[in-house]
Image: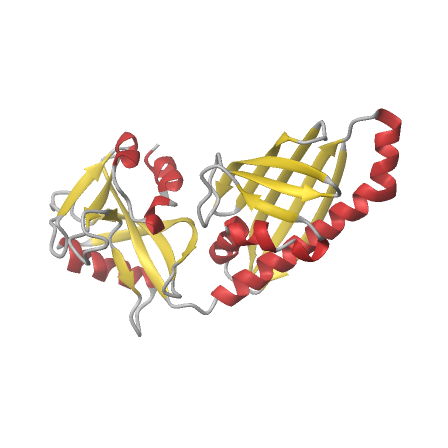
Length: 276
């Protein structure tokens, strides 16, 4: 099996680089300079999630890969269609001070025995290295362009194994759809302060932030959604719909039954994992 790796440092937080890595723009346009055409297939939204598929036109062949892992610090895919016997792509992120180290690894097995291995040495390895280098450039460009965006916090509030969601009452285009509590980080606040304030304003409860969940999510309004986990400071408090139509506690099985806003729908695989 052939194995190649490439690394790159990116001037952006890990969660932002993770979003750029998962964004379909990276797959669809990031490799265009090398003549590689990428296209998101089944179910792919703006951010890739497990089960999404990508088709790449490379050196006259079409390769179809499926996302099997999309964590905050890792994205992995496997080949499901194409001329190779095996292809695995794994990207791992690590925070290094204010920057993020991206490590790309590709493993593949070619057909045709000795002839296939000769093709690997003569052509394939250089092409793969060029693709990996172009991929780092595409992720870097996107992540660094997002790094200065205004942050909007979302809150994954969990109590007794259930997640709180709230139903919008306005504007009309969003009325009836579901989202996590949250809002913009105000001047002088840090993100944890914003989580506490927003939950007090929207739910009339006091919460304790407990960590982060998933990657950032780029919003159409030019901001960046960042999800924090939290718990009730007082387990006896009952959240109420101050600004929304309804609040509801959800199990993992309930998550796909609601009509979520698109920006929150991409979080569902992370929310399921949190509830498990």
